[in-house]
Image (tube, rainbow, N blue to C red; front, side, top):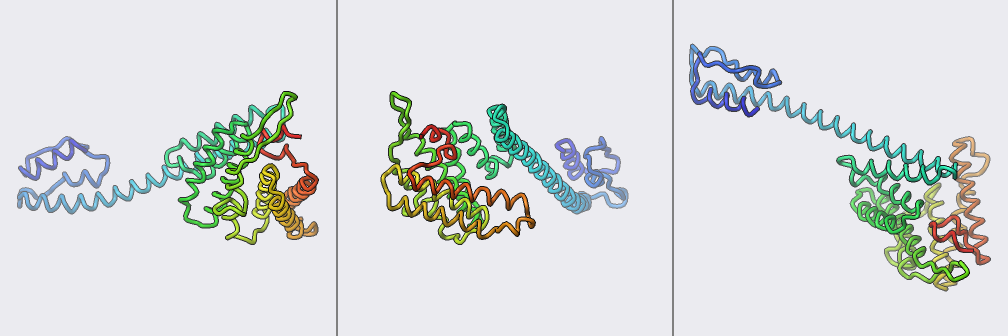
Length: 318
């Protein structure tokens, strides 16, 4: 293009029928046509050459602009497909880790690598799905300090989402897991290996409905919930109840357990057995999770929280 530019400038300054050019100057036929001026022997003036060149270049630029946009769109699409493929591979690896404990560590690490690879693809550094899955994977692996930072980054990214519902759900979810991790950091192990927890007011501020801007406080504006959103609402109230239990806030703990029970019960009423054929696998799984939630709530009312269901360090409690 630089060489071609100089040829054109020379032609405009010193037009001559006998002047020759080294072709091809451009890959585009439309651009090369600018240099094929005819009828110079009739009226070889710089003004005519410039006018013709300007019109032809304008046409050529429009064509090239459209071609560049098409090329950019293709690259963007390919990068989206590339990122999606890595995210799906990570999700599959994570699922395999859950089903087969013998390869859990290997598959969980592989999943983390896939999610992080997706985040490294140009234009996907702020991919919300990949970022959230990276944070979940770090938490599953027990890298809680890194997971905490990832959830905070997710919360910041979610604040830029235009859709209000998506924004609120993502921010609330990130706050919920931050609360779990911060509570896990308060674990203490005595000489006999028994793990106990101290209260964590920061965790309480992040999740309890009584705190302005908390996960549950934000979600109130989106109620009522259905399906998996309702299930997540029950889960958050269960975690909030745990935090309140450790802090000794018995009354608020009871309220959160009641909300959790209502959410799980609402799922069972919403998805009765006779309707399972509509979406058999998803509905069956949803009912299963709701029933598990109800059992956790019942045990929590007797003072026993399901430690295996919580963030890794918490599972050491009895």
